[in-house]
Image (cartoon, helix red, strand yellow):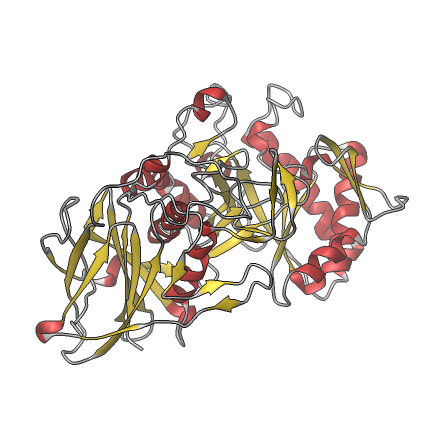
Length: 506
């Protein structure tokens, strides 16, 4: 079959086939680390355990592992006892790292509640507990009435150190065979967006490290949260758009504001992660968050983040969140009966698993391809990070919106749609051509993240492979396309509108 291609691509949205742009792979001198665990989940109980971490109270007298008050829908307090933690360890596969967020809000008796939480978590989770966080979205504490108007990075740093010192000096921590590290900061508001702290001391990584929150021996990472859209209020709800989500320029603008934040984290001897994110805050929006377009967005979002140094991205989910990638149990929601199942946006995680897989998976580096950098098109080169670095993989994503009438429904999610518009005519394709360092005649293989259209909620596949909604098992015959590198190291392939491809050597 035709030889295929790696590096880059094409101008504009063309009908049927597009013209070809020839691009050379850049040197990997500016490449950043691509971790095997770059793509993870921030899981929740109730609407979200993370949302209620600062409302969680440890109560050993409970007659059940946990109790939400006044009820599971309107949670003012989440009371837990020690065996509540067992459910996390039992649910997730062995080897899953679990980060637990302690209640920093409750200062009673020098954070005795948080100390009891930490002791119970370490005792129950053991080696699975990788990190503690102290408080969630602490830059919202003033607005919630949990701290006074003088709450700033210096006061936060002081309290963070007080509680951390208590944990480190406790018998349960000192005597533990496995000692979890800490993830600090946990800020909600983006650094370039005006918020309630502008007149005080903006909560960002630059300011908090200046305030003294630096200790690379125990602070393994700093965390920020980011959502490109929001359902939290009427003004932002009105701006929700699947078309806006499917835009690489918007992805870059959202993420690039964290470049100085990542630099500050690294100067402090740690690193920066996206500790919580998804398509739209306050649980997402069906018709946007649960579509194939969201899968393409998430793929581009994670890889863009990696190219600027954000090595891990945690996608938030909750048991009734409209942006959750899967639904483990059936439930009634907004007048519809939803089944257990997998949603279209889950397939970004499956595709990314292929991107980071390989015998050298712990030593990849990634760089963005400058010529594959348009609102509807992006590309990435992945290099092996050994003594003689070499090009290993290429990823290209077409984010152009192509809506279809096929795959419009999925019984595990709502029937809502962002648009009833169906794209006319034949689905456009572009030809991608790249000059690589691969030898002519080298065999390559191509995997595709495919769906009927940007708006599709079902019939999404990764090279023919889907997921059984009842068992979670992979189903379908994998159809990996084969190719050969042309003369001068050129690889060519076609890429449909609203599609992603991975090109790699077998």
